[in-house]
Amino acid sequence: MTRDGRGPRKVGKRQDGRQARPAAADPARRAAYDVLHEVGSSDAYANLTMRLVFADRRLTTRDAGFATELVMGVLRHRGTLDAVLAAAVDRPLAKLDPRVLDVLRLGAYQLLFLGTAPHAAVGSSVDLAGEVCGPGPKGLVNAVLRTVARRDLADHLAQVTMDLTPAEAMAVRTSHPAWIVSSLRDALGGDDEALAALLARNNDVPTVTLAARPGRINRDDLLALAPDGAESGAWSPYAVRLRHGRPGDLAPVRDHRAGVQDEGSQLMALLLADAPLTGVDRTWLDLCAGPGGKAALLASLAHERDAALLAVEPRAARARLVAQALAGARATAVVQADGRAGPWQPDTFDRVLVDAPCTGLGVLRRRPEARWRRTPADVAALTTLQRALLHAATDAVRPGGLVAYVTCSPHIAETDLVVDDVLASRSDLVEVDARAGLPTAATAAAGGGPRVRLWPHLHDTDGMFAALLRKR
Ligand SMILES: C[S@@+](CC[C@H](N)C(=O)[O-])C[C@H]1O[C@@H](n2cnc3c(N)ncnc32)[C@H](O)[C@@H]1O
Image (cartoon, rainbow, N blue to C red; front, side, top):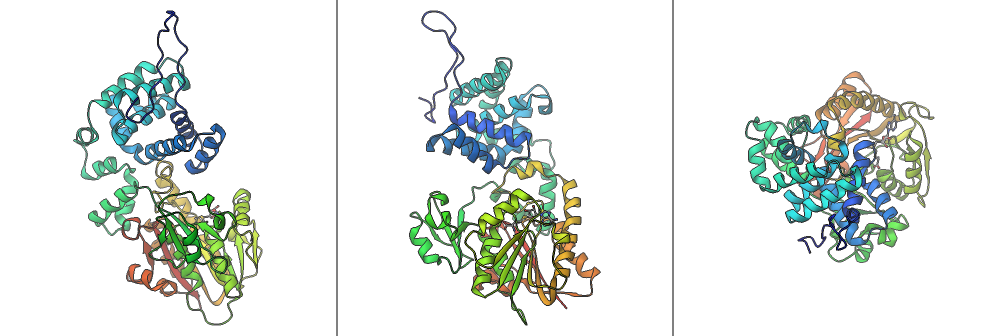
């Protein structure tokens, strides 16, 4: 038995002297490989792909847990793993068959981050290589992983960062692309201590948080149903943090009285819903609603105040997810439309949320694949769309009404620059303090205002940005 209890099944001579058939890779490692390959070769989300692949393979709970650890670990630490592998392979990693590279990453992750015994990590990787690529690369996988196994992570890091600048070394050590490190440093005002804390936090496994949807279930009742160890969130009056257990096992989640939602994301909905507003307060718009997390919380809050919510999403599949998230909510409608040209009259809505499409640099804990997919070129395209959506929201809100501009990225170009530009180009907008609608504990923690910034390393939430604007 190996240290992780999963003995590698090796090719070997049978007692009758004939060559045995190559042993099948173990189901957890094979499933993890298949997910990584799919995520690497398409735009698939890792969490959705895992769900599909694990169900298809009928993995046991134990195997699914191990496979999840492998997938998320490899995606989080890919930058570090690749730097170590690059030093052990005799050609550029880009020249390797991508299937072989995924097998090597899985093996190196087990060796350097899980402490798997070398014979288990190497043997199972050689089996896996044989299964997914045929016998050709088995020798290479064996040789490279044996080289990796000779040192521990600290030794490897010391070696591969020796000739790098401090910024490059930080990128390798924390497994972030250099452009993301530099964008996050700018967003943190050049504070290197905060940067180190944020980068480290981005590699942690985030807590699963639920939102008890007001009017449908209260937080104490949700807490009473949650598995042992669950506790109230620190910032949102609706948040329940789970220590273990699967949200889908809870009846309130299954029947939409509660939903999985990061506490920072809950605060973004609250910040719009609870901000003081003069005049009527009947019609709310969620301009970028898919997949519907904030829309579901907004719908409950709107219903408590006798307001109706219109949720907009251009992509059909995502619009369906919004409709599912709003199942059972009253006075809501979902429209599949481009938020820049929606089917409504100007000056219509009392409150508008623009939860803009963004690089997602604030949610790298939850979506580790995003850091390898995004490029600096994405920022330019997104900021054009973000400006257009904020203009459209301003046109849609009535005079005196409120627009919350929110991103799950702290990138300066997607946050301050968008808001500053739109404010400068319109005389009908004024910025107000976005903290006004936050619960007291969160107001104190959210900085000096008027804009709100939440950080994984400070608030243990997703990294969120919000500005609140009132139409004159
Ligand atoms: C950050 S996500 C919104 C998350 C959502 N509010 C939630 O809490 O679940 C941004 C969404 O904007 C959508 N989007 C992209 N282009 C858009 C457009 N032109 N108009 C409206 N929404 C758009 C994306 O499809 C994506 O679903």
